Length: 119
Image (cartoon, helix red, strand yellow):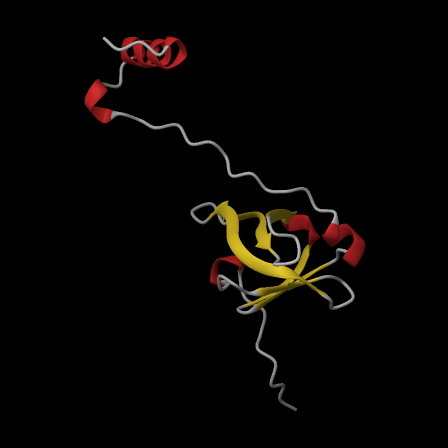
């Protein structure tokens, strides 16, 4: 007996834009980003967008129950999916290699940023 449904895949093989569904099969959104550490093979969660909500939302990995290349199944109820907190991208610290990397240079950069002074 053969099945036409593809086999589940690892989180690293998930396609951007894959459909994300709640436990009842209703659509929750589409994968915008996958959060994790590929080198350590640690899957943290999904950033999901849905046109109805207009923003990105985060689904932690423990709520993901199955991954296929174009589909993710969760254990969320539709109500839980609708009330997921908005996902705000983390702030990125810019490193200026030309300014040196010592402790003193980092303190000077921090002081400049804080007091908005230039040397």
